[in-house]
Image 1 (spheres, rainbow, N blue to C red):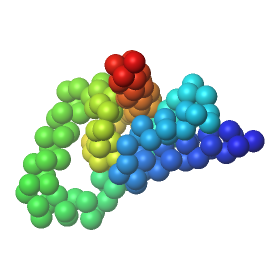
Image 2 (cartoon, one colour):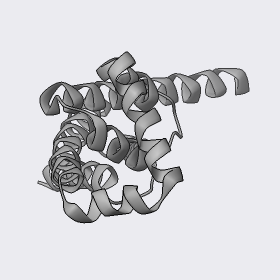
Image 3 (cartoon, rainbow, N blue to C red):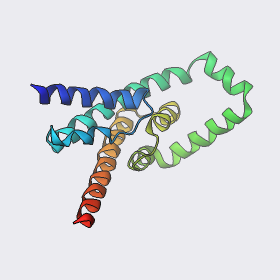
Image 4 (cartoon, helix red, strand yellow):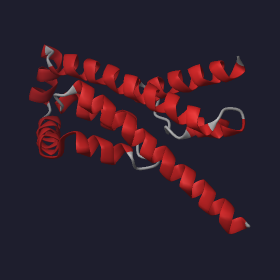
Length: 152
């Protein structure tokens, strides 16, 4: 039963990490002594995917509001940043989400909101976020094993 509770907490942590927590997605891997690593990966990826979908829904609604448009109209730098981001997403699409979220330590909450505001495909966006998290966690795991093998 404690494994199920741990997996539920991992899932909720990853949803929170996508939606609001400015913390790394790799933290649940610290529970590998208590929960099988494969299950940690599965629940972390599912949590990040669901969280990214929630972020996409929030971002999609936010960009359609009058308040957001007024903000862009008042702040030239924000409009310029928004336009650059939109061109970046149009050019690289969900592949950019996948690559950026594959980088260990990369601040994924802010980038998820950026992609959500300028993106247009919520399901692909969410899947790319989850897969990027899986790759990121794999890189960290390989790094742990590499360091452990160097120590002997």
